[in-house]
Image (tube, rainbow, N blue to C red; front, top):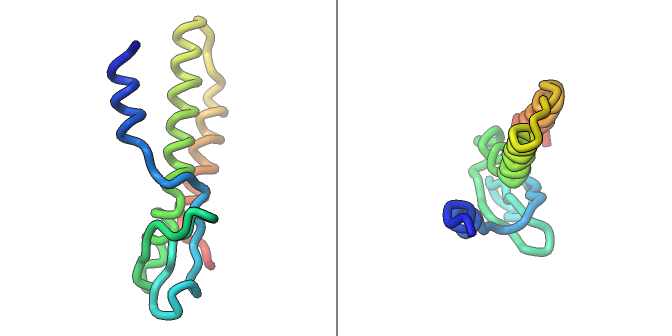
Length: 103
């Protein structure tokens, strides 16, 4: 067993995604970051829209990093090259989810 992998998995336990932003949930000047049936995971002051979007994208960012790591490990293990467009697309989609647009 790889102890490093086990330790990392134990440290990354969090409320499952996707997380979404609900500006109305608290009825005040707060954005509520919700995790579906798991309730809310964070509150962010209303003027901090970009921070709310970044927090809500955290599970997607973790997922993207895991995909990139998996593709990289597979390419090393099996001796093939991964098309850089795969990494570009994973990163681009994740960045779009993390950047503030408009609620």
